[in-house]
Length: 493
Ligand code: CS2
View 1 (cartoon, rainbow, N blue to C red):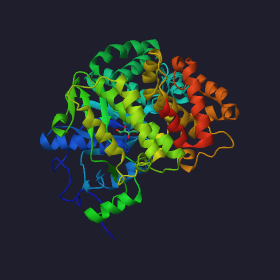
View 2: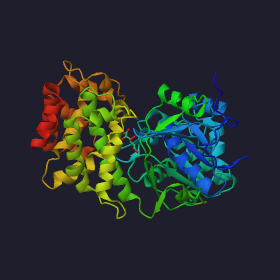
View 3: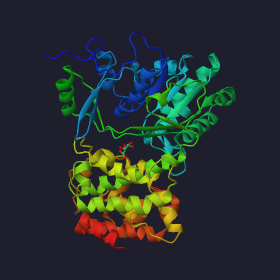
């Protein structure tokens, strides 16, 4: 039996910045695969180039599986960078510990409040912000958020990410007042500004004495925007075998990732930061154009590929993009509908960026699942579709491929009774499923009106009849004639 991955067994390929103890300077909420293949790798590379007190304490939300495995492995795990050309395994060694918020909220708050903690980073997914994507404000209907606000003074251990952050800030304000940076690394437009607004809104809801005590401290907190980009699928046994074969150790929690990785960060930190620019990150004063480029060209197109692919029987993104019709639809939505709505940052070579996107989606060695990209579409699409769709509609054009994206999503989430969307669509998870399901029995046009009427994509888009009409037409074609016919119809326009 192979030895378990550990500090002692870490092979010489380890991306470990030094021996000895690394102090914790960063607390990260969201110990999932993405963080471990993105921020952790950039941080390890930065620390290898320039030492500093920037170890990361990782906090998982509810599940103990990853935290337990990491502890058993001295906080080591492998990143399996994989493409058809090569497989490269590395072991970032930057985590100083792991906590589970659902079980150890008090310790999490303590870590957030520690004077040595100078940066708090987040990858809690779009859902983790307990906000309403339509209004950009707190989702007061969210039971955990409502409970946090209601019981604030009696509940030392908040349930939501925002609650944990505010409790941590409260302790900081009371005990030492040292400045701190909170950096969102989730796929949300202006993620830093959004986090700052949500925290301010949360604080404004506190009992007056606590609110008045905490509000001035918020000036000591920086909220940089950050664009993050790396395709990181779920772990499977195949990757565990790769690690065993390449490193000769057992790793229970390796992370697969594509070779590409990009991180663009607003250079606005309250209490220092690692030299992330030496670990591959780009610093700028305005992350906005990078965010829009990535959220629309990559993520927006990704959604279309995932929904069409799943409906066409494809388990993976590379399998989907290899189908002619889906490749065509992806090209059209990207070039004709997303691209005209984004400012291209001056240092981006657009043609190269687009070609690289198609290469990344075609990474057949990575097996990124359509059901992973298609899950939680109700929160993701709100970030991707409405703004560009409205730009076209206001200019008098119907964006057919954006309508097709919404139609394909609806077919996956709320298929009519006599239509089987297939196993990959059925496996997609989304809280909106239960909301949309009752409408599936309606005639298509009414179904689309009701679905959009839930505010799924904001109220402005649902008021555009021409868009809803087009979505309904595509739902009918997808259900009756399939993906290729729907793409043909969209492209014919
Ligand atoms: C994907 C993203 O699941 C999704 O919605 O579009 O996770 C995508 O893979 C990453 O944002 C790439 O950086």
